[in-house]
Length: 305
Image (cartoon, rainbow, N blue to C red; front, side, top):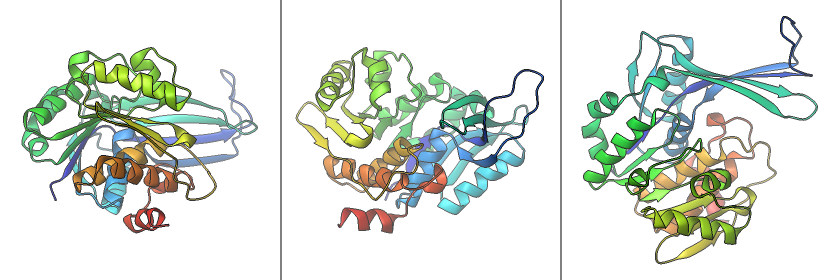
């Protein structure tokens, strides 16, 4: 099977829980701390590798302890890192404050080296991108790098997936390079200016994205599953539950990783959406993002129920 090549970022998530945020100049005691791997591209790479894909991940890291966490995460999952070590920067990190009483959060992301992923970085990996069955990217690294990678993939006949997260205004020419665009509800709203709160509204937004030149649209709908929409069919795939929901962070990354694997294996597109939904359905029953990604055996078992 040809590889899945993913361009994106890694950040170390540093999550602190406390009763409240400190005021300026104040020190308070927290109730817990968790350090773990994050970043959409990295999470999607782990999800795809755990689901059975041959995955190469293109990114930048610093030369520091957080880079070691990234490398250990990928080694455990079976991801092949295609990393440029940036000695003039640092591995990205996110400060996440979580309020004990409500679970509400406040986040600061410092992308570091990953925020410096360049068009030149992409050009250096052009042959790898051309060799892929599937190419996947998001919008956490600089958009010019994502655009160039999509151009290289499309010119080589590689199937392209854009997960447009975080939401951003994109030129139609970039969307036209995408075989599949996979926004969630809020990202679909951001791309189209249309409300997306129901399946029917998702269908309308998906049609608007097709009009911009996208090949097909998959809008992930949380506990409502996902909507697949192209010029020939519009299919709502219900959520595939694996048990009580513990944490939804990373569910979209799980979906994208699973979806890419199923497409790389030549599955029918609706089956690929179901495979992605099953991957996400398991991931939300566990805490964390990359550590919550299920194995291929777990996904197959859920789909066989």
